Image 1 (cartoon, one colour):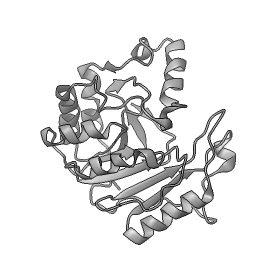
Image 2 (cartoon, one colour):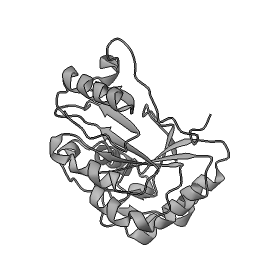
Image 3 (spheres, helix red, strand yellow):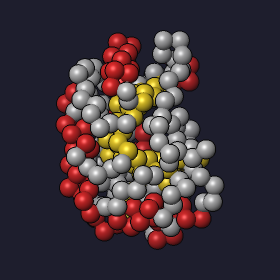
Image 4 (cartoon, one colour):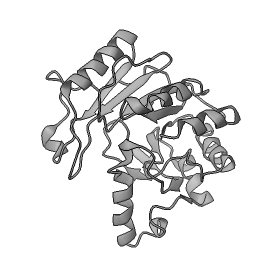
Length: 241
C-alpha cells in the first residue's frame, strides 16, 4: 500500500502490477513511467518491469490489517481486468474487499468488456466502486459495459480528457471524474469540454469531481473551474467518515 496524492482517493493497493497500452488515453501512461523508476530503484515488486504480474497472498490480504476506514484506489499500477489476470485471482481480490466493509475500494478499468463478462461471477458489495476510463468519444462504449455490470456504485474517469464528450448517457452512473493530461508533452484540454461534462452531470444528478487541468506543471495550472473546486462524491452510506 502507499499513501496517494490522487485527489479523489487516500491510498493505493496493487494486487497486480503491469499492463499494456490499449487506447489513446494510454499514450503517456503514468504507471509505466513510475514502474521504470521503481525498477531502477531496485524494488522487487517491479523487477519484471511493466509485464503483468500477480502478487503474493500476503499482499492480497493486506487490507484486512487496516483498522481505520480508508478510501483505496485498487491497482493504480495495473488493470485488474487485464486479459492476463485470471478470474480466479480477481475473485480473491474481491473476497478481500468483501471482508472489509469499513473501507471503500475504487477499481478502474479500460477493459470494460472483460468487466461485464466476469461481473456475474463476482460479489459486489457496496464498498466496491467500479469505474471505467473514457478519454474521448471513441471509447464511450465502455460506459455501456459498466452499466450492465452488477457493481453497486459506478463511476467514470474521463482522464486524460483528450476530446469533447457531448451527450453522455449517464443513466445508472453515480460519479464522474474529469482531468487533463499532465507530463512532458500533455495533450490539450479545453474548458468548454469540461464545462459541458459538468453541466451534463448537474442535469443528471451525478456527482462531479474535477481533478486537474494538467499540463507540464499541473500544480501551477491547478484545478479551479468557474473559480471554484468541484469535489463531489457519491452520496452513499459506505463513504467512511
